[in-house]
Amino acid sequence: MSVFDNDAFLHHDSVHFFSDEATGLQAIIAIHSTVLGPALGGCRVVNYASSQEALTDVLRLSRGMSFKNSLAGLELGGGKSVIIPPKSWGGDPRHKGEDRAALFRAFGRAVQSLGGRYIAAEDMNVSVEDAENMALETDYVVGLDVSHGGMGDPSPLTAEGVFLGIRACVRRAFNTDSLSGLTVAVQGLGKVGWRLCEDLHAAGARLIVADIMPETTARAARLFDAKIVDTDAIVGTKADVFAPCARGAVINDDTIDQLAVKVIAGSANNQLSHDGLGTVLMERGIIYAPDYVINAGGVINIAPEAKGQVNHEWVRDKIKHLEDTVGEIIDQSLKTKRATNEVADEIAIRRILDARDAGKAWQPSFVKTPSLRQSA
Ligand code: NAD
Image (cartoon, rainbow, N blue to C red; front, side, top):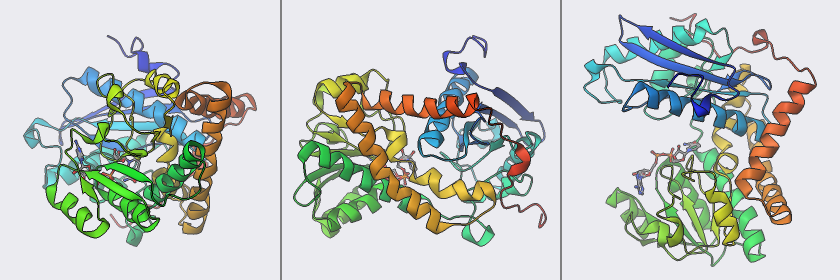
């Protein structure tokens, strides 16, 4: 299949393939849209079964970033990048060593060659250190450490946005502003899930948790009086809210009949294995907070960096709006009897098309992220 025949290619501005023999770099950068601003989206390192699979992944993800950045009201377009780990890494995408630093510098040069149309950040298996190696070669990478002019770890902000989004859902599902006494099943107690549990516990919610790390769930039982269930059982656990905070495609054709909640609202990306499941959830009276809307706290946190700024106050203020945004999407869904994910996509696309029709043209020279290149 060629790039142009790939279903996910539709409406992409451009797709760029890079290789660097010296470091073994093989990477794809997909730019879905730069109508609202430079295309911002993370870079991931994944062992794909084929380069075709890598291409499909990066195309889907870059389109998703356009929607996420648009709906969050950011002046940013959507893009994403994937790096295929070199053979010399022995199949370990988290491989450590000097050859890793060299590869990320080579990737930084690739990003720089796009002149600011794409801004990279961390995603799966890409650390702050990797991003800082990119930054030795490019002006267009965000997610840097606070000490290097970055905004720092986005996870607490993502968790805050998810908490507010849960509140918006609960208000509609249970007609209450209080989470006290409600039961929330949290899948994944990592950087976001753990912080979310802290906030939910403080708000008086009862917690049911699952994680592949038994010591983490044991800690949650101790600190939050959480009930622990098996990782396989959490999707079907009876609760008021299910918060997927681990991995994608948790709601799929096999698990959808197991759901025993009124609300699904969590941080994981791509929670639905396909879009049609949003309609199934709606028909069953389950309120689903579209993943890229409720988890936008992370990208909101790095947005100022894309303008070369550090502005925590702006971020906090912007994240507060997520409660209203999630609420408005649910209200429209209930009114028009269309799935929440459909409503969200429509709003996101509309903002991009309106800007395009108004002739707004973003210029790369407007944007410069904090640079480490001078010190390289
Ligand atoms: P993380 O890696 O810190 O945490 C993931 C947790 O899930 C880990 O504790 C892991 O042990 C657990 N886990 C893995 N497989 C599991 C399974 N099968 N069942 C139960 N638990 C399992 O990741 P994170 O940063 O907390 O992100 C969580 C999710 O939210 C991811 O899907 C991520 O893409 C998404 N997200 C995160 C951010 C952010 O700011 N960190 C922003 C947007 C979206």
